[in-house]
Image (cartoon, rainbow, N blue to C red):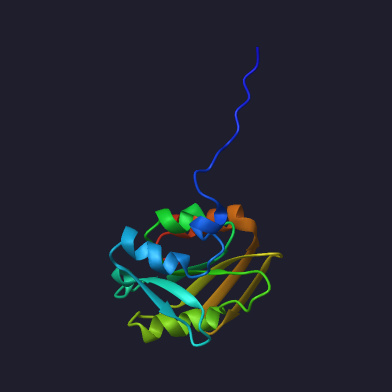
Length: 155
């Protein structure tokens, strides 16, 4: 005897608007009241957590891909900002995110760490901003977990 199980979804991807880059700017403030949706100077939607605006720690931001959104971004409250990027469209830069955080009242003097899911591993730093690119959402989750577990003095 065998049993065949097939996943069914009551709604289509189109109905759920899974490919809409502004989807989380509308939904996430309903989940967490301290969330505010803003835009970078180039019009990229960014979700910021105003509860962290007075933090003296290094600010963490994440950039995920729109179709494979990381569950770590939704479940963790240590991210000052996150955004998604669509394939083929210009993405938010680490500098744009740091500037957006500063414009929205965040203390950025201790630095901003941006973790991005991309197609290749990379790391770059400019004064006040460090950016790490990892391959895939799973590695993005791992890096975010490591950064969360780090002591403030190590960050």
